[in-house]
Length: 308
Image (cartoon, rainbow, N blue to C red; front, side, top):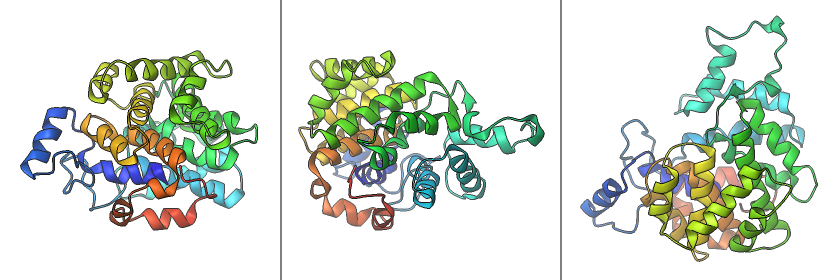
């Protein structure tokens, strides 16, 4: 739930590349330091209703449907559920799912008899942060089962044929699982991930980079160094850094992520999930929960009592 709440709080200023523009917009409203639930959204290409979720949150819904319908992750079923959802949605759809949808339903889609398996034929080279937003649901279902890593990789590869995207998702999943199962703090879990041999080298490097930056620079500077785009690797680093720097405060972590600019909703899914896992649902601001119009609906559908 932390990922969804952070997403809803962030969407109003999502996509603004210049942090100074974010600061100026807040100053115009005398809302310095309170960027959450900014409305109407400042990005003209990303207009949603007050308190709504971003496209990142909505693209998790097919995965939730698959898990609730079957009790486990089934790649083929997820591919079918996602195709049905994206081909019928009227809301915003991110570039990654659009490319995947075109791969299967567009004019250049392969014929059915070509033999391609939708469950493992994602878009080649798609390293976007869409890989990360699937992780909290999969952790909720597979934490402590020994099956989490396989489920995460399979889920990412349905839409993204990218080792980099998989590595970022596996690192995020490992940190979140460690916090939930072992009870580690954000700091301890990221430190563990930075030296976890079971993770891909790129995943360990992301954790190490977030730790190093946490010791050296503030969040906006750290995000600027990695890039404010929608890549899974940069979103993971930025999301980890915000969670590390938040001092355990859900508000502080999400606010810092918004004010850093760029593809802030993707980073918010990482930050929100980790901070909720660290402190539980009581740490999620009640006023924010009331503003997030889909919060109760999503809460009723969640797989277990895991608040991430």
